[in-house]
Length: 379
Image (cartoon, rainbow, N blue to C red; front, side, top):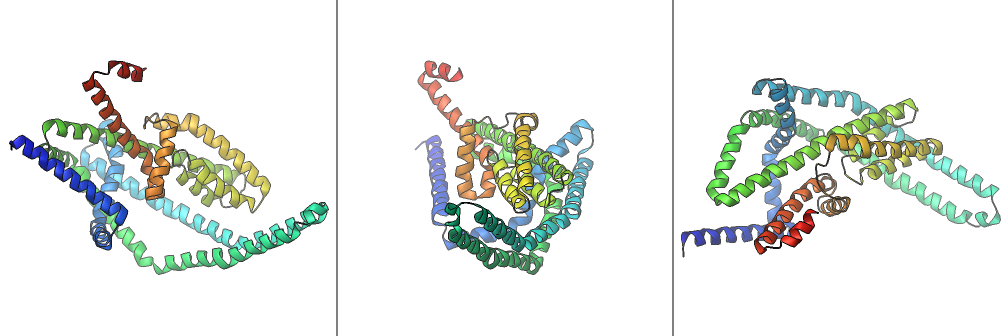
């Protein structure tokens, strides 16, 4: 066998083995694999924190170096300092307000149930006999809701609060990983050119030159899609969350911080974000005042229209290059696999897969000489 054929055969076997391993891990998830995976993740967690922090801070570092002509290390240190300042500000400003909103919400549940019972009873007393016949069903439903809230929701909230207090060591572990990850991120950002060269050497050493060139192109494309989308969405969601907070505070609505965080965080999810954040927030306000709930719903609709037509396009542009159908498809598929994280990164990940498949199809059509189909596609 020729060396070229032997190398191609080995690469094929390696690729097939990798695919089989992924299938086994995904569908069977045996205790051996999952236990090994958990231990590996636990050991490498500070480095994973560092990689994520470095990836998110890289655009800021590059802008500081290019726009302000700063040297690399001062730009990195300034970026990390800004990140810590933002985290501290969020902890000081957001956490107390969030705890207050949650406490008010828990305390207000029994009163909400009582007000609902009174309102329904008054409605039934003033209406026709047809409504009065439904009184028994309404009573059963109300009693069931009250029992559910008192027996399930309140104990679960207490359990969450208790587990958070008991898992203080876990919070310290997260803080430790965050600090270690920040230090690791500094080294990664400082030596990013060297790491890039090393990765390039590995790719060109393992794969044929044409395959290595293809891997480099797709890596650049992947980085452009994912980083551009995530950073742009973070800025967009921050603007939406702050705008929502200002409106809720001005109108005197309750749970201002809680609602703003829900709206801002869920805005990270394409397509479904407005519904994921608006519906639970509206339900919270409905328990206080139907009028405030209606005002909030109108505001959210206007805000999302503004975001979808003005703010979002200016910040994100057409980062993904996908139609609304494929974005919806990606969110549903990746959301069912990875949950909320899958909904967040599903669209940019699918954009990369879509581009790979599209280029592969176009290349095959060119090799087959299907010029008519290519011209029809470019129209």
